[in-house]
Structures are given as structure tokens and as C-alpha cells.
Length: 135
Image (cartoon, rainbow, N blue to C red):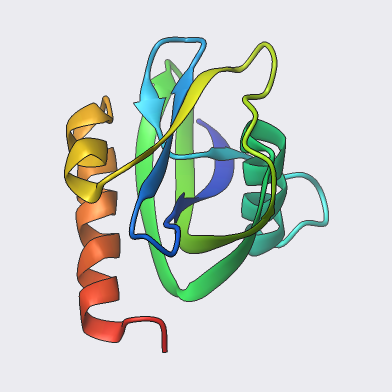
């Protein structure tokens, strides 16, 4: 079985809003993408978020969770998610990959994401923030 790995983050701004992306493929999720050779997980997450959304982020690697699934026969994909906060850039969807971007309340984001795993990841991220805050 072939293994693939992607990294991304739940991006939360200083108003507590969550960044969600609607992919041109139709699903709504958090920004993420494939690891390039020589990149760390955090570097991949930062690069992919910038490419997909135009937003520069700071990664909080104290929070790390994973999702594993099979996107097609013979392939297993692991996706690592961190928490991130925006530190610059301008919101703009990546042409050809991202249909739209939105800052939503955690409740709106939970309702908007397509897959149950995304809801679990958001729930874990919000629980982490309640417990640890910005420290």
C-alpha cells in the first residue's frame, strides 16, 4: 500500500474565527497539502496555508493531531494538523484549487466542514485552546 502525507492547520484569528476552505472538488475543510522533500511538518503546513489562502501563519505545534484515510484503492493518507494563527498576508483563494474561503465562528465552521474527521479535529483544537489558551 502506498503512503501519502499532508500537513495543515486549524487557523484561528484573534477574534476566535476559524478559517475554512471550500475546495474546487466540492468539500469544505481546513487548509492542508502534501509534504515536499526536506520539509518539516510545520513548514509544510505554513507553505500550504499560504498557497491555498494567501495568509501567513504562525504554527502552534503544541497541538498536533492526525487523520488517516484511504483516498483511493491502494493508497493510505496521513494528515497532520496543527493550530495556527494569522500573522500577515491577504485572504485570496488559490486559483484552480480553492473555490472560496471564509472566517467562521467555531460553531459555523463545525457545521460547514464536510467530513466527520474535520469536526473531530476542530473539537480537539477548541478543547486545547480552552485548556491552554495562548500561553
